[in-house]
Length: 300
Image (tube, rainbow, N blue to C red; front, side, top):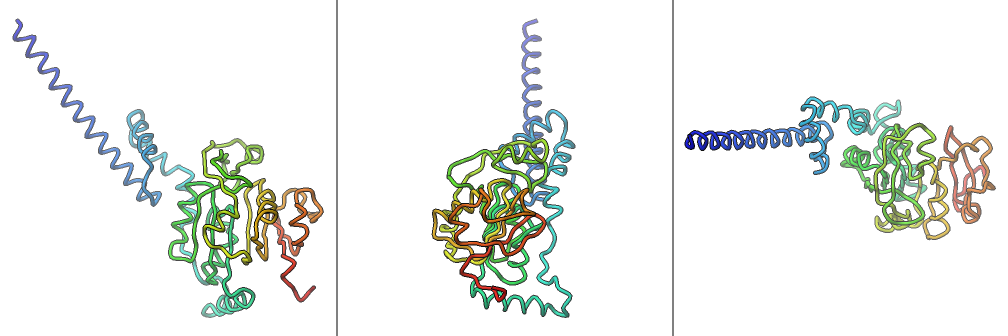
């Protein structure tokens, strides 16, 4: 009788051990599959926390849910939309003559043209990519969202462009970034992000002052274009740059807000320092072009 009980106990231990090994093999197989899925679909390596999260999903709901989650993610959707070849030609000229001419003309204005885009997001509705890809400008592209920054880095590979993943504000230190449903509407300002609908979530991102980032990347104090579109903090950043640093972009493209139809440099959000050195030169549907007073136009 005792021998039978011992045999059953040993058999049970062997069965549990075999099951444990099968579970371990299955976990390693899922982990490998998740890593392959990220490399193929998202063009990057997954974070350890992402792998662990998807392992939990696979155990609870099966690997099909992992695939559905990755393919249905905002990051994959954004990559799919943005991942198109950057064509160096966009005019109707025969062999790109217009692009070459504009490249020469831009260098008459600035021998080393540089654009800094704060809130770069990606190729779609970019104020910088055509200048970088077509005319050979240097670009410093700053984006707060980690997934969008990774996609952007992939998109500009091979161009004279540097991508920096951080939020820009008038102070430094980690900050909460509120993620909106549309990738271009996320913000450090919760109220601003929520004004476009319910939030997807929130993440912690590094927060920098613009002047410090420019200095780290050796941007000249007088550079060609600064484009700012960061949902609610645009003038906070511009005011801080002009009031507290030697940097003077010659042109600023900036989202103005609801008062755009009657935009004036006398508005409260414009600091005295900005008002003293810049004037409005043009408007689009949502942005205003500010020109530094040192830049002369024939119309003047």
